[in-house]
Image (cartoon, rainbow, N blue to C red):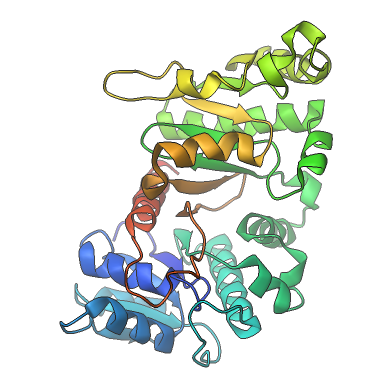
Length: 348
């Protein structure tokens, strides 16, 4: 390996996380060669049996230390046990124990990445209700993004305000970055401020300039229908969004908008017969940005956290309790997340 290994956190053991991890090792052993599972040995053995079907399950190699990964043959699932083993949990049911263990794995991986022991973390899905049921400290965080922000800020001695992070969802056709993430729609409207919009554009510019090795073309969506129609449908575009765009444009950014949200994603969509006009769209709130990305290809979707002093990616779906334990979960998005993490590691 030319870099430290990449950790894949277990996710919620009652969901499809362990299953899609095992499926990745089964389907793409070369891709997974410098990765390991930060999780639970028992949960991964169970998942390996689940995806093995009528054939033999992939063997699980238990790591005593990260250095052991170099000696694990291709075709095995290397697992580093994080703390005490997790008692078996029922598939598809909210479990405080599974929520606590999932959070424990993320904290371990985040701290390891901040120390430089691992190159990146790829996070299998959490279940927010299970995390809440797990109690402190995990019930303080709506999801991965906020938990990782808190760990990184603490490690650097920063306040949360001093380490702003943003969520980027990307697939083969579209990238979008969100001004606000896991808050109610009413709170999301309040989050459309000059500082938040300008900070989101700056974080997006910095991340994509490194990844693309050029100045990214950034489109900014309006908040209101038709981007406010000159103030007829709302004044946020005039009083907040446009001034934030102008401020960042004055710093050299190649940024456009505000553009009507019902057309900007179509203009940015990239395909063989439709080259995208923009490299990324900054969306004003969660569903505005994620609905078009997921519609265009949830199976290739990758979640990337921007603004952290570490590389973190994840699949663009949840724990899928409705199909957990049936052996039918699609691992494509997790494979894309591993690919993305490797590309970002090479960039950084």
